Amino acid sequence: MSETTPQKARVATVWLGGCSGCHMSFLDMDEWLFDLAEVADVVYSPIADVKDFPKDVDVTLIEGAIANEDNRELALQVRENSKLVVSFGDCAVTGNVTALRNPMGDPSEILARVYVESPDLNGIVPSEAGIVPPLLPKVLPVHQLIQVDVYLPGCPPPADRIQEALEGILNDDLPRDRGEAIRFG
Image 1: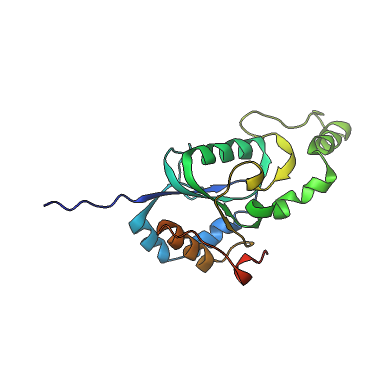
Image 2: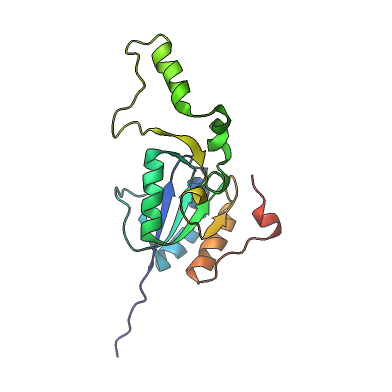
């Protein structure tokens, strides 16, 4: 008889419009990351040098809000290619700090005022394709664009909460935050 090695889970983390604090908390799981590596492969992350979001991802943690066209496109790819999507941190869950620009309205007017109407050598809004993604008129929390399966609040969520959530997800026991665990900020 031959023993078969169980297939590792395929995990991804994504960084949209935010500060990367959630990824710093992810790294704060320290030596537990070795335990994670025994049961899961990180197939996409700002921590790894992977350019294109892969297919057949088991779980993706999305940090940050959807603030520009590149964020929007990546979030749609994540949903299409992930079995489970986790809104990872307060920016992804509510828009948080990233969405503070929303009360000012569509940023195109502000950009025109700053780059075109104010003294500038070129008098144009920076828009180099592939370098400066167009801003969306309004910053969105992730669930306003795609279906989210799990919410992991916190600014950032502490490492122990991330670990607990991942352990539950990888054991097919989705987290059900209650009480203090759902506190934002």
